[in-house]
Length: 101
Ligand SMILES: C[C@H](O)[C@H](O)[C@H]1CNC2=NC(N)=NC(=O)C2=N1
Figure 1: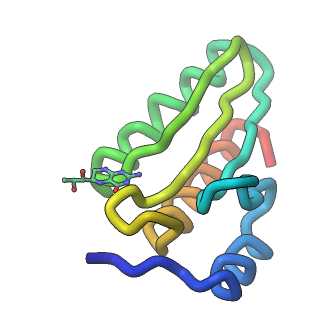
Figure 2 (figure 1 turned 30 degrees about the vertical axis):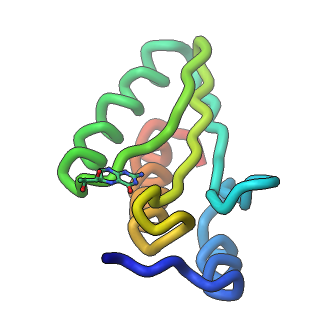
Figure 3 (figure 1 turned 90 degrees about the vertical axis):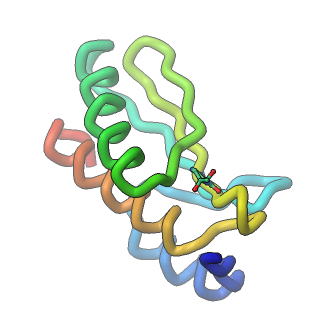
């Protein structure tokens, strides 16, 4: 099973991840993406969903019009693992291609 990152390793990874932060009261990381419109937000989700499925690692997320709120944690490990960091990095890459950094 993939291992939870230590608090230090989590913070070091977050320092390299634009827009992501630790959630309060739960070991997870979160970012809210804001796009130009619903079409772009849903396009982001479609592309991120393909990455998630390929990795067998899935986001908790909520879409309201042009915003997508994402929370990542590894349920099996009870915290944040390298899988969350990798998915967060991939999501930032997709958002960047859509003009959101
Ligand atoms: C059996 C399967 O590998 C697991 O249920 C996967 C699927 N997607 C997952 N996604 C996330 N975010 N955390 C998990 O622990 C997880 N586990």
